[in-house]
Amino acid sequence: GQTVVRRDRFSGGPARGFLSSMDADDRIFEADLAVDRSHAVMLAEQGIVPEDDIGAILVALDDVEEAGFDALPAGEDVHEAIESAVIERVGPAGGKMHTARSRNDEVATCIRYRLREDLLDAVEAVNLLRETLLAVADEHTETVMPGYTHLQPAQPTTVAHYLCSYEGQLSRDAARLLDAYARTNESPLGAAAFAGTPFDVDRERTAELLGFDGVVENSMDASSARDFLYEGVAALAGVATTLSGLAEDLVVFSNKGLVELDDDYASTSSIMPQKKNPDTMELVRSVAGDAAGGLQGLLTTLKGLPRAYNRDLQNATTHAWETVDAVVEATEVAAGAVGTAHWPEEALADAAGEGFSTATGVADLLAMHGVPFRTAHEVVAQAAKAAERTSGETASDAGEADYEALDAAAREHLGESLDEAVGEDAVKAALDPAHSVAMRDSRGGPAPEAA
Ligand code: ARG
Image (cartoon, rainbow, N blue to C red; front, side):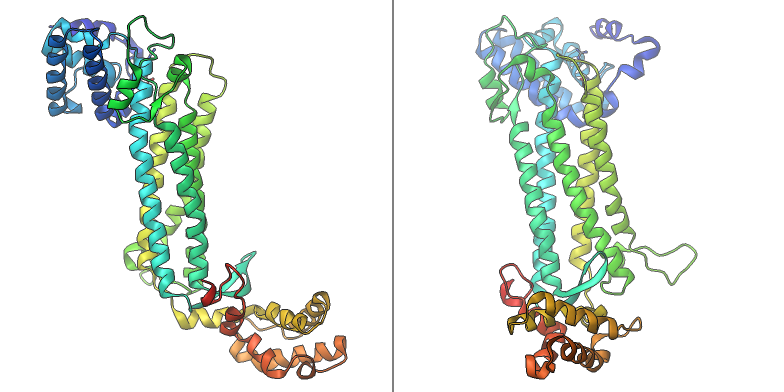
């Protein structure tokens, strides 16, 4: 039959499997059908191929779609296989479909067509996580928790303030994905192998039929550049990096009993039945490694490629697919975990007073009363040292001891008691984590009114 011609060309010999991208091409099966249809329609409209032939080709393409990817005949890749399948159905006239194009502009168009959808899926997942963070934050604008720097208790904040910090970063991650989308959304079709074509193709028309915003102008650029791939993958790697920080926090907070993941997002040990491990968050954390690896693999593959098309580009693409799949899944899981996690208010409030973490607030209070901030810092530093806690002891246990240590330091550095300097009540209030949070109502700060 007609396919013998194609099979001969793709005898492949021992390297047959090595040359083939069929394993990865399922991903662009629908894209290739769309690209074929738009190109065929344009060929008819431009009078390049008779309408009858194009009609038969379009019918065949529907039939090929119906039969599905797995029913395709042999081919080096999905583009050849679909063409063979069309020729099987239409006869030699089916071969007119490939007039005025090359697999080079065809595959570049397919990748962009499919990646657009994937990038939008990624944006959707990121936005779902953002909405989830905001919804949970809304419940916890007054839930005081410890904030950390260097993983040490630093200053009390709220769960809402903490969660919204990630929402902010994710909003920029989403914007970066959309930037990548905009530059992906341009059509290379009609560039042919790289050097254009003598046929009077209408590149704007195929771009329009495929829903692209415009065309990649230079035909050599169009068929060989893959910067849209690394831009998208870099944006995805950014999302994964953001997620890894959030996941790490949730692992650490779980460890301290400051958050409880829902059972659906935890695992137990196969040997220690009492264990509830934050495995989903550990896997989310690890996806940053996959994504960074994907970006690295892609850039390394593209590095030093000469113009124009080289077969290396076939391998570049798979990095993008793998990265998008890993990152979208991790983002969805993170949204699920955040949306179902329990924040134990009492444990959080207790922990918020740990490590003299309201000390900065006392220093601020002294400074508000005219003590130079550096001096105030020294007073608090000395007191913190003197009041060093045994582990597990919280502010509420130790409030009185803290006050006395501060008072002693104030007398030494300021020559007056704390009560004289700023008032005992004010200091005790500043030492209280909830009050400490409420005081920090500067723009973007954790105070409930600032949220
Ligand atoms: N499957 C190939 C790819 O993904 C199609 C292009 C083959 N083009 C060529 N000139 N050999 O890049």
